[in-house]
Length: 181
Image (tube, rainbow, N blue to C red):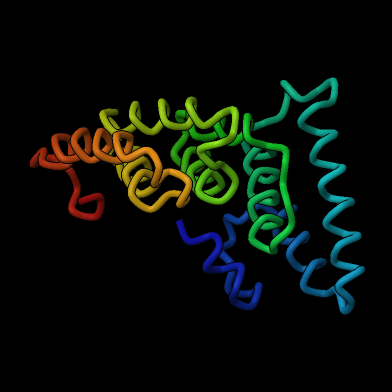
């Protein structure tokens, strides 16, 4: 999952699968000549996303829209701004059956979720579930988050040990693709 790798490169190099709204937001942020303009644009976007997540039609968001908004939040966090919304939506993406949505959820979880958040227990449950799922890609995403996740997971060594034990059994399967191992 190299979304953030592309965000450091010129936007022309960004993968075409990056949601258009996210690409446009990045272009607008990079086009800000003043820090005040950037802050104002980030605040506008946070208000918009909050409205989408907590509005009347929040249950009707498509997977694409949910992915777009969560990745915008992750980008805002990478820029150094506090993000206090979207944790529930990150969990929804992590639990998705579609690998693209799941990957976006895991990517955002690595940036937006800490062990002190209310949804941390749900994130851990999703990770442990994905470690023994039939999808090797889901297993790889879960293992990557468990191993390289936020430093705040360091206080929970049992989580990392359980994750490693589950993954070891699953990844030892001869049918497991080499790119996952």
